[in-house]
Length: 159
Image (cartoon, rainbow, N blue to C red; front, side, top):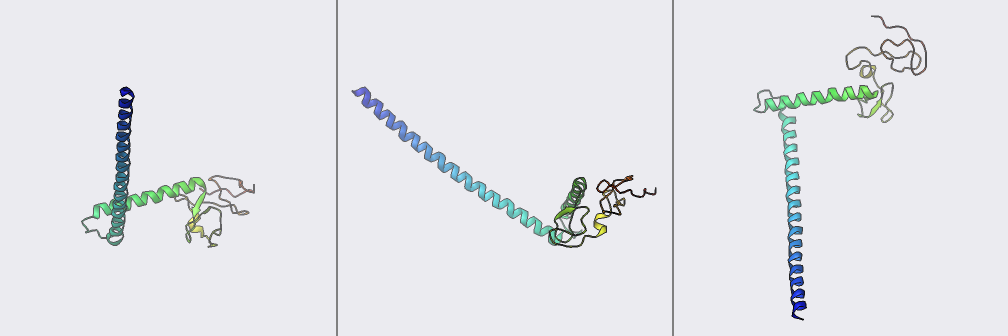
């Protein structure tokens, strides 16, 4: 019978040790989560602070942060160029009034109703004039003799 008593006592000891370890692991996970939350708050605060400083002093060429401001301006410009290329590839443009993505052929924004200027849609990324079908207004590909939307013949481009 002593054997079973020793076995029971050992199992109870192991059970208490495992329970203690489980509580320790749980507490460790909670603390790590709190550390992560505090680090995320710190990062977002630094980002907001940096953005505020850039917005307030970003045009100051004599600032001690002029090099960083220049890098930010160049990155923003590159992002804008990539977005325009992406929009061109997708056949869309951005409404100047509300920022919605709309069809390149749209005369009015379907979201806010603002009239779209030809200036916004009138040139390609390369800066060349974009031609439109005189019948339906669809954008024409370079060298097109017929409209791909309505099939109407179009005048040839003059070189």
